[in-house]
Image (cartoon, rainbow, N blue to C red; front, side, top):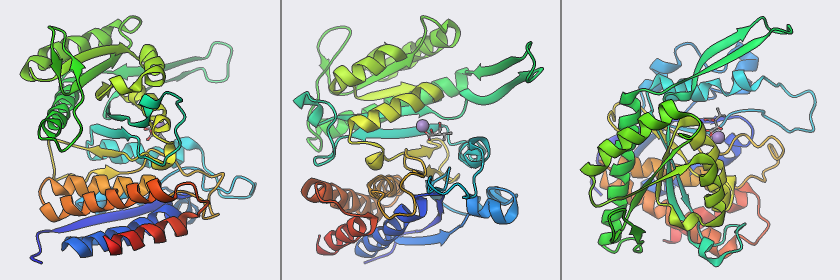
Length: 388
Ligand code: IPM
Ligand code: MN
């Protein structure tokens, strides 16, 4: 098969279950790449990690940016408490230190859009009793560059009775407009797939009457946080007319949490601030079977030269780390998202991503009731990839 371009991927397993779920993912990537004639060059990094910190006194080397910038994409396992939690002598760092690389990577490469699809695959745990929750399909897009996560503020007179803590939130027109526009672009793609029959149709009511086949729901807390809430609302209203075929909706974040549980099937694309998106995506993950099957990516939709960061929504799961118990599905589905991203330029990658997602879905559907460890699930998926 003719080879397209070569994709260089930095593979960073990280902490806790990260290395455990990364191993079968690397094997699966090699398998699908081989099948589709996709040129993948995987380079392993043992940082960022607790282990690197133990040896070098920092989570990653000072020139991390230069090293990672040489890659087309970054695939990260997990960061945080390395576990196991019953080992009181394990090398432990504060969350502020161990998780900092996540924010440094996202900010350092200006990966301003965090995409977290919440698609319920048959065979995964279903926590909602309503049968309509069997097939959920939403995409939560989280603003990833500013908002509540700018780390501005400080503590005045720490430890004293007159201590004051400030935590500044920053919302710019530029970052708001680009994330909202991106949400509409994704909705447009979803509308197209539903129109061509590649995805099942979904009707969404339009404000002016009639139905659309995709929707963007804006999340704010504008009844209490009026400044940014109103700015987001205004910008949303300015952008929406450029996408007349897409239905629009708004929810306050607290009501959205309630409706994610009572009727999540009414949501399609959801666009939220950094903190709201963070909270909503844990909830959305659980609606679709849990953190063990929730993929995620951080991308810069305007600049494909910076390496996007693909990392599952889950953390290092220290309670089960080191025991070979973690489900690799979230990591595998995250790798499939990476292939999709490559697939926007390279048809072999697009096919490889589809192949990997189908194999994970088929394994979940047929074998998810069995008690299997990480390796057994990885091996079963690999077998399936060989037979496909
Ligand atoms: C996530 C995580 C991180 C975040 C933390 C660990 C900083 O919760 O990826 O959702 O809030 O972005
Ligand atoms: Mn989170």
